[in-house]
Image (cartoon, rainbow, N blue to C red; front, side, top):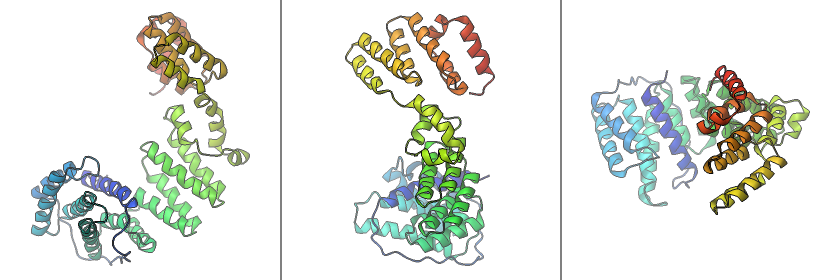
Length: 375
């Protein structure tokens, strides 16, 4: 299991990479070499290193960056490294902190360029030592622009940590850029197998890679990635899954019988086609609740599948003290909703006033079904 420090540094590097991608380089591209294994043996974090790492975490993150706190962290990290160059965690944190400091400087300034170059040099010094730790190689790969140098660094990262999900993903993208599609597919499959799914950002990255495969004529491999995304998002709300897949053209995948395409076609009508919903929201904002209710009823008549108009109607009826009408609206929703996960999702969030006004038999059925399902 990765240590907290490892997870912290990986996070920081990833956050830094997003900023790097948006900034022009002020220094020429360099070709970095990966040294053979050396004799550098990292030392466990000392008390001083742990304190400096804490300051780094609190003040030097890309989000919530604090100039004064990060400057203090940098000074303490420098002192730790000066006293004991074997403090690898401190050296990595220092490289990350300096990189993030650079983006507090004016774009194109000499100070920004100096700080960025210093961060690169700090990572390169660790790589030159042939350290048996994946983090310096991956950290340098993120900040390096030369594709060949990045590939070498990523391959070394994976030699040291074969289950590094981001290294597999980055390597797959670079290989695809170079037309090495078969190896890119293998790398991305490995990425999917070792990557813990953490939400929409991961799913959208997968969709983007699948789109690139499809554009390269590898539709079957693209379908496999889409299927993996479908499985990973199984616990997401239906509307969220529709948003994740909204850019995907289903036609070629339905023809080949791809699993995700068949299921996605079934749910798309339930999370689209609600043009009157926005109008109802505006009418309510103007204080025209009755007109908003009529608009929502028209929306349900036109497309009874989406849950959102029912939920909005329930809220408006409750706002006006009409619990029985709210219960009737939600009863209609549950009667037409066929997806057990969606039924239970909305049953668990019903207003208590709505629940008390609903038919006991329907409540008993939903309660019995949803108790047997995990939230």
